[in-house]
Length: 548
Image (cartoon, rainbow, N blue to C red; front, top):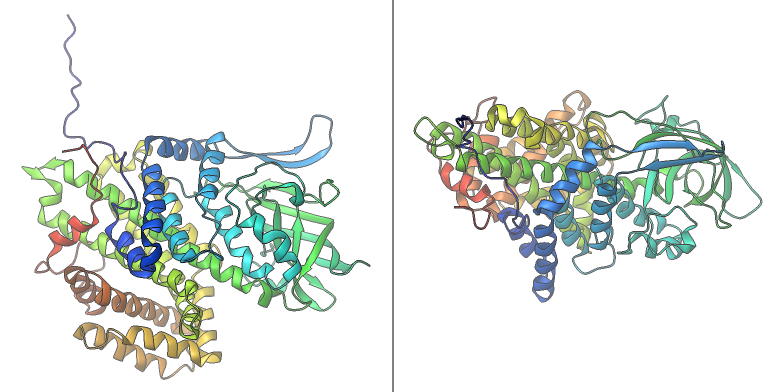
């Protein structure tokens, strides 16, 4: 008679079947803070519905399958005709379709549109991050298109539509459309002014033919792309549709798909233009200025996406520790593990609070908030995206060997974690952008200092950090070599100010003591032991109904 030798004990239940939005106290409080009371119930209702879907078994299975079955490229049909199509697993389409129907490309025309979209993006991409790329670029293309009222009137209703139409056909025949972006080339990378793609003017007003390449073009299955090319008047921005108005396919040759570290469900490609029809967006020679608002919006999505990854990593770590026993008790009750979890929770809360404050600034019509975005977006993009990888790696370690196994989902989070720091300008690009704003746009610095100054006098460590930052800002000569240090301090001071104003006292106290006061080690889990770390950890837990 066989004897059972495999009784499973001391394993936490899956973190599934919960509302990702309402379980995130930091996020739900931020939405309440930044949303007009007259529409708050509506916004909370739609985000809670999205949160329940994101925490469902179905959405988690979609995420796993989309990641495990990356897209494939078909350059030709069976007869040898060039088609340049990308095939995706059905789970990708389920995820992307649900996101579009939930309004995650629709922010620019709705009340509290950016706050509700940012919160939804943070919630839904926790199920799977790769499909966030076309969502982000479609959302961000709107302000660039608005430089040309005719193009905006044609395309904006499709980009903000809640209908997902995956078929490849002329835009006029589609109820909804997705956009991508092509800026970098193999000889230039972030130095887009070194682009060599050529734009030749045609007889039709605003019509050009493009010849050249793009080294990194994400989501090549989209309906249109904003690209940079050299026109007679200089570097300019163009709209490249995949399918022309007469139904024929534009010349958009996908050379190959990138084999990436993470972001496996999303197709990123190299493309060639050879007599590719394009429409000028904005003025010739002003391509960077035209596309810069798109870049800024996608940079904010990098912040939101990193906040989402950190939140999911912390949720998994705290959930595991709440049910796993070791050395005579639950891990979450052990002082050293509690220190680690609290430290991770602080990083996650600071990222989410900052991301939603910036989204609220997009909803604002004040000069103060518009100026704040000019400095705060690149500073946040620099810092928050860089914190994502160490947070995710430490959270994985909280699960021990279980976290190193693919089935836990933690390796997928870890592989995804460096992405947002690289896309839309890596760390040095963000730091140099901050320096440019400091040197050329004094109103941006005034707006930043006004924002952080709202918490002045509430915490002596924050006050000291503001004073030190002002000393650094007093001399911008020779700043490039210390730009990263400056931008890091700016981001931390801004996060500290927001937490002092809005977070529970124990969270603000721990953040200011460690990040601003210097009472912190070089690794997570080195917070002062005298702080109320238990409350910080408990706040970060995602409690699941029906699990004791």
